Amino acid sequence: MRIVTAALALALLATTAQAASNTAQFTNFIYSGSDPSDSVKTAPGQYRNPIVQGFYPDPSVTRVGNDFYLVNSTFAWFPGLPVHHSTDLVHWEQIGNALDRPGMLDFKRLGLSRAVFAPAITHHDGLFYILNTCVDCGGNFLITAKDPKGPWSDPVWLPEVGGIDASLFFDDDGRAWIVNNDNPPGPAEYQGHRAIWIQEYDPKAQKTIGPRKVLLDKGVDPSTKPIWPEGPHILKKDGWYYLVAAEGGTAEGHSQVVLRSKSATGPYAPYKDNPILTQRGLPKDRPLPITSAGHADIVDAPDGTWWATFLAVRPYGDDTYNTGRETFLLPVEWKDGWPVILPNGQTIPYTHAAPKLPALKAPPTSGPFRVAETFAGPELPKSWMTMRIPTSRWWSVKSGILSLEARAAKIGDNDQPSVWARRQQHMNATVQTTVLFTPKADGDKAGLVAVQNDDFYWFVGLVRDGGRTVVRVEKRAGKNDPVDGVVVAEKAVSLKSGQGLNLKITAKGGALDFAWGTAPGAWDTLVAGADGTSLSTKVAGGFVGTMLGVYAHGAEQ
Image (cartoon, rainbow, N blue to C red; front, side):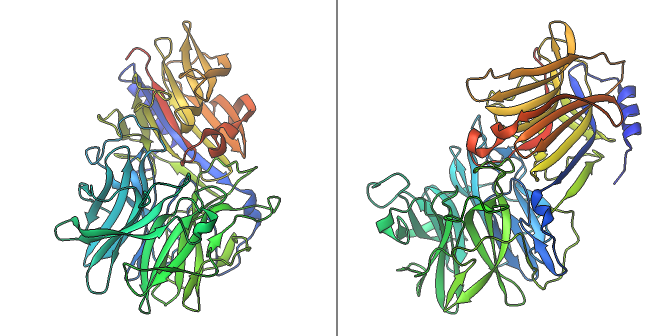
């Protein structure tokens, strides 16, 4: 890969002199982060939770030989459904995105927490399968690939499979079954009353066959009116079929339960000591809490051990977190024929003895780290995403420069704006870049953004307003704020032709700092200690995490 220094990149910016007046050019993009939990040190032979930090929810894992593959939800961000590879369940490298072509799906103008929910990956007879739901954009579909890196097939829609969270199970005899969350068999008796269904699937014809059947109505203890049985998976061990599913919603009441049967189609009996994973009911004032654990998937390793990937969150306040739902790992202990991830009442550990498997050398996804993007091109890193699905190529990546066309589409309009971003993966995170942009008309802007959704975001960058150019901090903290955001602070700035402006956002839990400068390492703080809890899921709602990246908008384009 060609490495481009910041000085050379700025020189290239100057020589190009903004080939188009509506183009913003970015270079020197650096992300770094750390967490209070870094104080919990890992001993030799241990790994750190979460294993994949930041907005990586609903993890599904499968093993093929000595290799593990992981997929996560991305909702209305694109490219979607990241595919990670590992050999030890601890070190993960993103090798692709299962949804990487604009024509595969249409996210329309959906909210960022709609679209693709809870993918489930499996492998059978030389083919990888991902079952997924496009909420409000088509329903349940299946995609396949011979190589998990891709390309993945166009979606095969499954209209007979309703609801969400479908997964595919192949039995020893070759028969395949789809299990999913859907409406209960009769009228819903309360909010959150759902059921888990099963139906046979014909992989050759790529369609469901035979009748549907309910495996679990309400939950493992219907007398308690359990809510949202979801994320179901079936696994088979020692002649038993195990139905593993989440219960309790995806917030602090989240949990994982298990049932078993001698037949794939049931009847299933629940484990007497359910749940097999939860953090509900623990003291709220415990140090460095991990909460909302559930949505687990269980996999066996080549050495005969069993492990579970699952989602959980790390709040910095009372259920406030900006990093989204993350991917964790714990061993599974089999007790009297039942899989247990964590005995009830125990806290999820930040460190644990690692699987005794060959490690994969991969970029860090856990613990403190720093990433400097070179923008060598021709594409962005696989972990970068944009809002919804682009219908045209409005960006370029070349020679250390990421160029964005400043288009009329903007954040706040549920549109497809000129935004490329990467996940905030730490409570304490810093992102900085250099932008070259000459706003021509009032409303033109380009800079850094921290985005939770269209109604909740922060921006720092160059803006044209009233015939003058300013460096400005703007925020939107709800639908009552203007779509273009509220001005928090600004300062007039005068840049020479070809001169870039340095920008920085620093997150410290629920606080945000915004800074700018024109000389390397010299920063002028424009806003300090801003209320960043507006980017928390508790305030902004939804299922995604904060994305940090670059943005350009052209008011008259």
